[in-house]
Image (cartoon, rainbow, N blue to C red; front, side):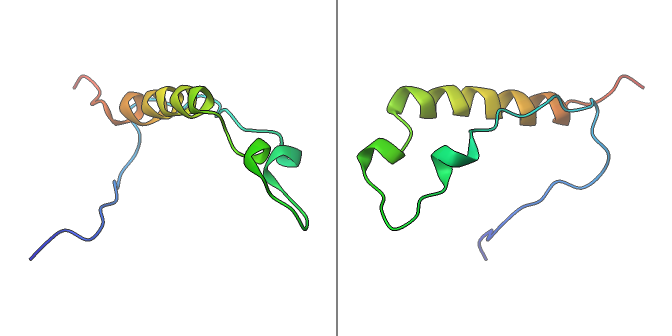
Length: 64
């Protein structure tokens, strides 16, 4: 057997903070899409750092 997917169940240990959302006008494209429409490597790295904070912080256990 191999794992196909995983999901965390239960209540978060901490209330998650706000998420970093991009401007919808930068994500929605009509009839054209080119290199300027994608995130730069630096923007991707920053997003990954933020995403780690959202998930790691919310999965820590509360003190009993």
